[in-house]
Image (cartoon, one colour):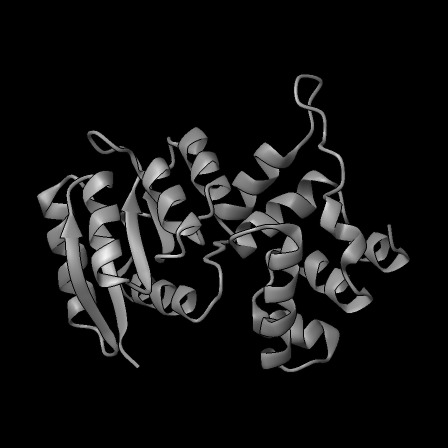
Length: 224
């Protein structure tokens, strides 16, 4: 199955580079390019891409707003493109439902791999970048105490709670399956149910929620 990709960035050179890399990759088709968030939403509604690569800072409608619209309307999975000095924007994008993010200088093989992973329902959780950011803004401070446990937590089964804990560790479906001795197909089913019960749009949001609440595998097995 061909993965349809939409690229949203206000720099022509960046769009060209991304389009060239992905357009030459097996199983991937670039279906559109947008120079701002509003155009990205319009094109996503028209082409229903599997994955959208979304810049954050664009004129008019920014990438965070556009990501939220795409995710809430179920139009596309989103990978945010960013740089190290935009941590506050990354936080907003992940909370908006992005499946993850990449640094714009990402090597071509990693970019292709990330697109395929997200299209398959995984999150792009780079150990070098994403986990640091999750830890940074999930940590409670006097100005921002930890939020109360999510309402849907009580509805999770014991297995779903274990999967939720694994998401909080940033594990892939394969890693979760190994940890819990279950198949990847079963993991995908549990992940979908966890997201639905907790009212979340992405596994990255689930990871943030688990970290914010200080939930561990042991805590979850004990129940709410």
